[in-house]
Length: 68
Image (tube, rainbow, N blue to C red; front, side):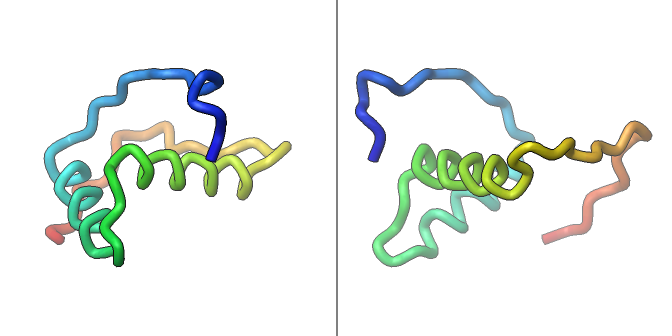
């Protein structure tokens, strides 16, 4: 775990579907994860996966979401 004095804060807004999916994913773990930890883990995995490479982002309007 990083030194708490070295952590940086930021705010992110999620749409309701993503928020509910994140809550469900975090709660499904044993033991359940906090939302903060689940987000930090996801960011760490993204950074590890794309280290030194560009991420290809869709420029067009996003496709309609599937119902979960």
